Image (cartoon, rainbow over all chains, first blue to last red; front, top):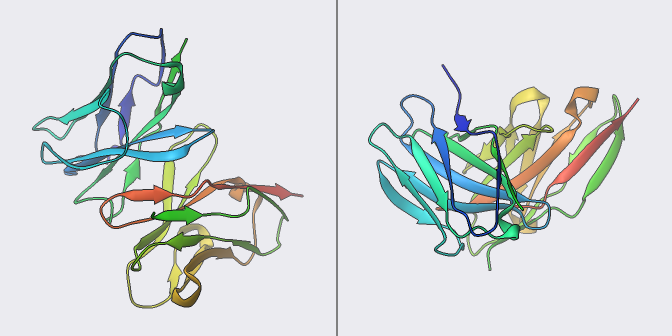
Length: 113
Length: 110
C-alpha cells in the first residue's frame, strides 16, 4: 500500500506571498491532519479534515487554511507568508482520526525569505 | 492548559544499554497517549499507543511504555538499544487533537 505523499517536498517563497501544500493520504483513509514543526515551537497541530469537513482546529491565525477533496486528498494554504512560517509541514492520514494509527508523510520544507 | 512534557532534550546511551525516555502529561482526565519516532529528514512513525487497559504497552522495534496514572507519566523503555535507534522521540497526548512534547534526541554511542 502506498504511503502518505506530500508535494512539493521543498519550497522557497518570499514574504507576503501565498503557498499551497498538497497531501495524498493512504488509500481508504478519510482523516487528514496537518502539523507544523519548527525548532522553536516544536510540533503543533494545525487542523484535521474528515470526509471533506474540518473536524478540529489548532491555534493558528486565519492565514492558515485547508480543505479536503472527495478523494480525501488535502491541501493546506498559507496566505501572506511571514518569516516565522518557515517550517516543516507534516501531513498525517488515518482511517478514522488521530486516535487510530496515524501515518505521517515526509513533510514539505517551506522556507520564507 | 493541556500539555505534554519531555524533560530530557538529549540523552546519550551506549549501544546495548537500556533506555528510558520520560513523558509527563497534564490533562483533566487521562488522554490517549502516544510515542512517535522521527529519523532525520523523515516524518513521524508511531511506536505505540495507550487508550486504556493494561498499563504496560508493547510497541514496534522492541519498545514498550508504561502508563502510571498516579504520576501522569507514560515513559518509553527499551531493554537494549541499537545504533539504529538514534533519532528524535516524541510523546503526544490528546482527545480530539494531539499535543506533542518537545522531543528527546537519542544519541547512541558505540
